[in-house]
Image (cartoon, rainbow, N blue to C red; front, top):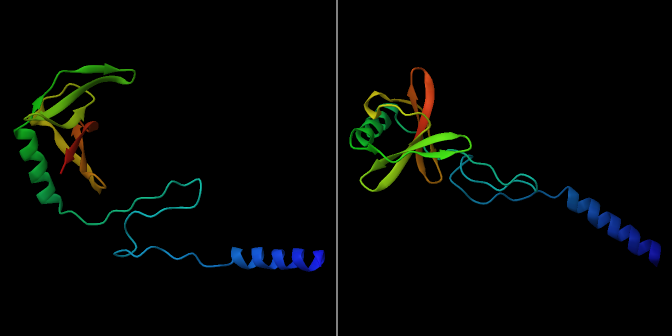
Length: 129
């Protein structure tokens, strides 16, 4: 009887290792999915953004924004970018807001983010709702 029970247990465990795992329903092969243990899930972009429209929104935010009070971290100085009373970005170097360019951008779970560039390098980040 013990041999039969252990054999049955081995067969059940072996069959379970070949079972297909159902994916949660979603819009397609893009979005937020949970991965196996050790991987805390992975992110994918849901929508494609038009570059010209996005740059126009980013420049409009930068035109109406001002620099906040700089503060120091172990990694260096941070300068918040404020639009009215909201912090909409961060600068890692003290640069003029009007001279910043828009680098790479992506749509994330909490809005759209963009790199702010000056002199060919990334000097900050901007969040767009």
